[in-house]
Structures are given as C-alpha cells and as structure tokens.
Amino acid sequence: MLPTVMSADMTASDIYNMLRDQAQLNTLMETINSGLAGAPEQISIIIGTNRVYHVRLGSSSFGLTLSGGRVTAISRGEPANPTHIIYASITTVLNIANAADPVSEAINAVLQGQIVITTAPQCSADSACDDDEVCSGGQCVDAYTIAVVPMGYAANEYQEFYDKAKPEMDLTVAHIPMNTDKLRIHYVNPSVCPNNQCTDVCRDCQNTAAECARRAGLQGVADKVVGVSKGDVAVYINGQPMLLCGCAGGIPAYTSVSRSRLYVEQGVYCYMTVVHELGHQLGLYHVDAVGDEGGACQGPNAADCQDSNKASDIMGYAWPQDHFGPAATSYLRTSVLSGYQ
Ligand SMILES: [Zn+2]
Image: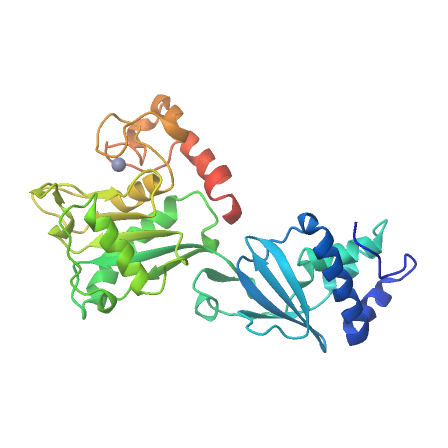
C-alpha cells in the first residue's frame, strides 16, 4: 500500500495544480520512490521496456526507468541518459476526478503511466519514431517490427530488392490477423549486407539473414527477420540444388528466407511464400503432411487440418492460398499478436 500524499478532499484542479508544482511533484515522486522500494510488485507499467523516460509535466520533470515492462526507478529531475522525452498532460488524471478514491486513482495514474497517454502529438510519420515504434494518433507507440533483409543483392540494388520484397510484405499485411497500423516494416538496404551468400535455405541462410538485420542495427529491435532472395541464393538444401520457395528457421523462429513469388524459374511460382514462412515464424505448423518444417497437424493450429476450407489455407500447400485457418487466426490474435490488435 502506497502512502498517501494527497488528501481525500482534493479536487481535480487541486490534483492538477499539484502535478504542475515542482515542490509538490517532488514530494509525490519521493512518495512513489518509497512505495517502489517497499512494494515493487505492485507496479505494472506498459508504456515501454528497457527505457529511460524523461517526463516533462508543465515545468516539472521526472525520470522513469523501465525494465521488462515494470518501473524500476523514478527519479526527481531529468534522468542522466534518457532514451525518450515525453511531454505529458494530465487529462487522464482529471478524468478520474469522480472516482471513489481520487487520490489513489491519481497516484495509480502516475504509476501506470496513464499521464503520458494524452501527450501532445509527437510524430506525423513512423520515421519520427524509434525503429520499433509506429506513429499512431500522433504518438509513437510500440509496434510489431519486421526487418526485411536482402539475400544476394548487390550493394546498389536497393530498388530491385524493394520492388521484389514490397509486394510480398503487402500480401503479408493483407493476411496477418493484427492491427497492421501497429506493424512496422524495415526494408534493409543491400549496401548493409551486399551479395550475402549462403548455401542452405533452412540453415546457414537463416544466420545470414539475422546477421544482415544485426548490421542494420535491428537486432533487438525487429521481432522477426524476413529474408527475400534475389534468386537462387536460397534454393540449396544440404548443398543440393532444390526448387524450394522458402524456409523458416524453426517453429517458431526469429528468421525465415524466401524467394520472391516474382522470381519464376522452371515453372515454380512461389506464391504466398513469405507470409507462409512468417506463419511458421509465429508458431504455426502445416495443415498438409508435406514440407520440411516441423510436420503437420500439430501445435496451435492443428485443428485447421479439419477445416473445410483448408485447401486454401496459407499453411497448406495447395493453391491458391488466401487465409490463415480459424485455429491459426485465433492463436495469432490471442497468444502472439494480442498486444497489437
Ligand atoms: Zn512450410
């Protein structure tokens, strides 16, 4: 139980003025500090992870250090090395003025980061936000982040890579069951990892893809890495040439490597491969007993093997594929992408 620094008869404007007053805010922060020291398990914060926020509230200023989604420190004044600056307002605090216990509610609003929900617009485009955020409603918010990396492209072939990879990611965006406004896609320039070669699409190519994302500064930023091959760089298995459209590093997996469906050779047309491999990356198995990746009819989408529409399931091998099955969709929405709905 946190000690009370506001009296129960304070009005909303009293709380407002308190939060705008440096001395009173300091008192509040000290109180929160002592509360944190005694009962950190009471604090649950979801405004970011592993970050140091410098929160400016009117003329007041304080620091929030977060790790693993929890506040680990609240400091008076500007923190030493802030990663984010938040210009806060207290509309949310005012909104709880009619609560039964406005004092506790106000403290909780601070502790839960709710006072930063109504910040002034900070962005107008994703490029104004961190690499793992998107600009949504004028604010930078956490995104599901995918690094799309070139496999086998020369340093000066960004446009060729983009023209192959963009339609694949457009297909992916169209089918993935999430709020795609919260999806951030980075197309890595081939100059970061020019002519990256590998021999086995299911093995060393996965490492090559991850290494390219790392060189692009996206390690720890990207939730998934999707490699898109220029051509035959990714069509060898155990050193033997294979007509394979793609492979995920596992189920689930950080990486996958696919040929573009626009790369047509010997009658192979790799339609929907990128989104299929991303399905594996997210934890889905096949709904047909074919393919090399982890078998079929098991895991969270096992029930889709009995789906009447499974012939067009993205995790199957028939054509055309146009949807994730109902079990897969439910699993992705509730277990994997629930934070991005
Ligand atoms: Zn597969």
